[in-house]
Length: 367
Image (cartoon, rainbow, N blue to C red; front, side, top):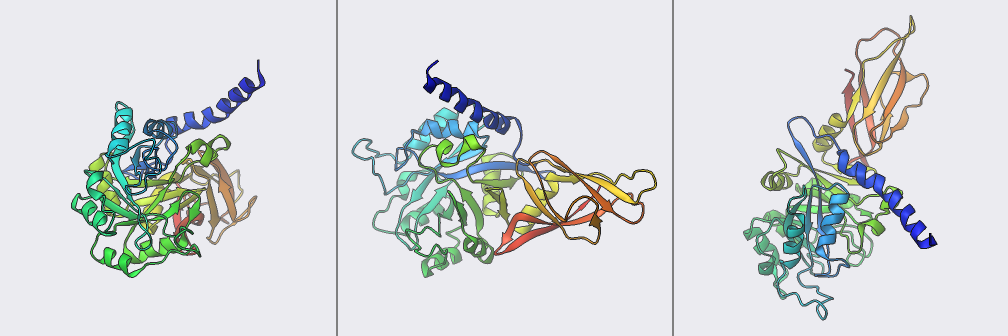
């Protein structure tokens, strides 16, 4: 067999296990009474400056286990215009929607309003007609039209070095005005391969929804090292159910957790609800007359949990900092000094970000 065919087979074998697990297992268990929706709300195709046709974006999302995507091609920036004239800015959405029919993936209409700073690049999703957002001479008009269409509007990569040379996200007077007039509803705290702690603070201080997106232009396979176990950034929306109406409502209410390089980022309550649904602990089990209780912690999610125990007990076989791999269990032997039927165990989630240099603290009660 030719060497190139051998390489192709090995490549496919390395990728398939991840794609299969993404389809068969949930990324996170949803908190009781709620649904959790994995979304990427910033994606490009050949209809602006992307490298692939819209159907590929759908197929990537399905293979990677996503529930919802929005094709958000640039309205003003059309570098392929000579080869691909694009008078209808809804066309990439139409193709993607047709590809996703009869699949579990939802595709919603979106667009990227491409301006210099301020306001910078702005995404509008859950809109009705992308063509009506195109106002080349007015940086605000497209945002106002997106709001007239009841769209969810968020600020893209506020830390982008092409527009913020120091990589620091900060508000200009125009952003303040857009927020005060409720024309801007969210902000990307993660974009492609960057995290902005300053954007997290802007979100918390101004009641903006935290969003994390791939902003993918090439193949997700290449950009996010999927064969090596990588994944695109995603926004997980905690909603009443999986309907687009409820997802949109939850976005406006800020019910999101961003997933990026094993980090989980969100408002304290959202992240705490998610962790409590995805980390369980057994009752302590004692051997003979020993006063060392064995507790089994189980991670129900696809994300590694990095934990620091912050309570009064000491452990017999571990330090207070440890990790639990995806879908795995971790036994800890706790020196309880007396027989306990249950325990309250406080932890700090070292990869759970709830603010600038702030990490989630929570308690888990053994079953």
